Structures are given as structure tokens and as C-alpha cells.
Image 1 (cartoon, each protein chain N blue to C red):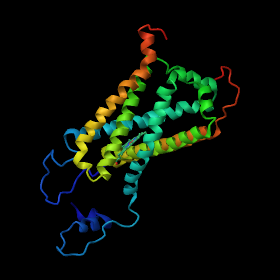
Image 2: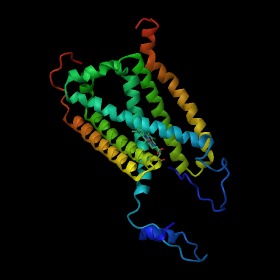
Image 3: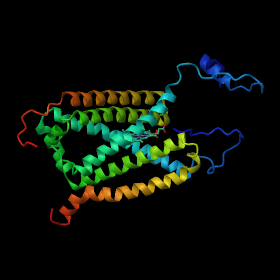
Image 4: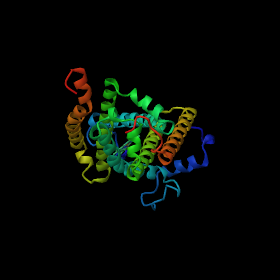
Length: 154
Length: 143
Ligand code: HEM
């Protein structure tokens, strides 16, 4: 290891791992504002609990109760989104699932990308897809008009 | 991840199986499956938001794309997706119990077999009801 190449932050991190006197007072290693990973960990669990209800409910209703994709057409969607309850359900599910999944994928990228450049570009791609998905999905839910002329009806 | 590298006060190299949650055996494979099903679901969600967004383009374009899903092959993919999400959800609950329930780590293996059993019990009727229509169609029942 060439010491010259270490940043001051890395040096202090290394210092934190040096052997201390057995009775040395406990030092706060973590600096303020570095809690992001802890909140992200907590978010995975909190969103997970809510997603159990929203996602499993969605799958059960759509695939089994309502008869699956054979029943689905534009009129079906119009009927569903006529209700603010299902609009809200889908909106919250969209945001939680997308953020939960993207945060999970961020971990996966961090784990497997070997080069900084690869990691950087994979994350750019990931965040771009998150913005696109959330923006498009929310836009569609908020601006959908189920009353327009529809030849085949419900 | 839930403490993938446990710090042992006693030091020394951990023995591969006992007391190590994420290395080898059930603990590791359940995590591998959790990761694969999570990533798979994320990619599906992307496609699903795009196809549903077609409702905002025109009824005809939405119906045209949904029509291409109405065949036995996509039906099987749907069952696979439901199975993947169901495992991810159940195992997610197991992860939370390991992290937050004081006895969670001790029962992690039993909890894995419990969710596998529940998964089978839910998927059997679930797959049946999802595939019913195509099964009837293919084997020439009434429907
Ligand atoms: C249905 C209810 C769900 C529950 C209970 C759940 C729970 C969890 C939990 C507890 C984790 C572990 C986080 C960690 O290890 O720190 C996780 C990871 C993950 N989840 Fe979910 N999740 C659910 C739905 C979803 C959905 C809908 C997606 C996709 C959009 C998804 C994608 C992921 C991904 C990609 C990871 C990261 C896997 C890894 O790091 O190995 N999950 N989930």
C-alpha cells in the first residue's frame, strides 16, 4: 500500500482500526450524515411490508379474482381507474415497488460491478429508468381519462 | 443485506455452516433466490409500466398489445412471475423476522422450510386457477 495515494478520509478510517488501549474511551467512528445506507436498509424492510399487501393483492385480484389477462382490455382499465381507491393503490404500489426494486438493484450493481466506470454507468442507466418509470407511470394514472369514446365498450 | 459478515468476538475463521447465515446451505441459496427473483420482478415492472402506459395513447394500441399476451406461453410466464414474486415476498418476511425477531436467526432454517411449504400450498391452487382456461382450451374441455 502506498500511503501517498490515500485520502485523508481513508487515513482516518485506517487510524480508526489501529489497536487502541484496552480502556480507551469509545470513539464515534461514523460521522453525521453518513446514515444513508442504514435508512436504505430500513426502507427495504418498511416498503417490503407494505408491498406484501399491495403487490400480492394486485396479483391475486388481477390474475385470479378478475379472471386474468383474458379479461383485460382498455375498458377494464377504465373501469378500475374510475375509482380513486384503485388509482391510489396503483400509485403507491408503483412508487414503493420502483424505489424498493431500484434500491435493491443499486446493491446488486455495487456488489458485482468491478470497475468504477462500469458501476457509474450502470447506475446512470438505473436512475434514468427509475425517473422514466415513475414519471410516466404517475403521469398516466393522474391524466387517464376513462370516459373517452371506446368502440368495444366494457 | 442482513449482516452478511458477522463479526465474531471470539475471532478466528468461522466454520462454514453453523452460525453463519449467508454462507453455504439454505441461508445462501435462499439469498441467491431472493436476489434473482427481486431483479426479475424489477425488470418486469419496467415492461409492465410501459405497456400499461399505452392506455394513455389510445384504446386501440393498448388492446393490440394486451391481445399478444393472451396465449398459453405468456400464461406460463405469468405463473412463473407470480411464483417468483410470491417467493420474494415470503422470504422478505423471513428476512425481516431474522433481523427484528430475537429468535429469528435461530429459526432461520425452519422458517425457510415453512415458507417453501406455504409457497407450494399457495401455488398449487394458484397455478391451477391461472392456467384453468388454457388447460381447458388445449385439452378440449367445455369452456
Ligand atoms: C412483495 C413484497 C416484497 C417484500 C416483502 C420484499 C422484501 C425485501 C427485503 C426484506 C429485501 C432485502 C433487503 C436487504 O437484504 O437489505 C428485498 C430485496 C430486494 N427486493 Fe424486495 N420485497 C418485495 C417486493 C419486491 C418487488 C415488487 C421488487 C421489484 C420491483 C423487489 C425487488 C428487490 C430487489 C432487487 C432486492 C435486492 C436483492 C439483493 O440485494 O440481493 N422486491 N426485498
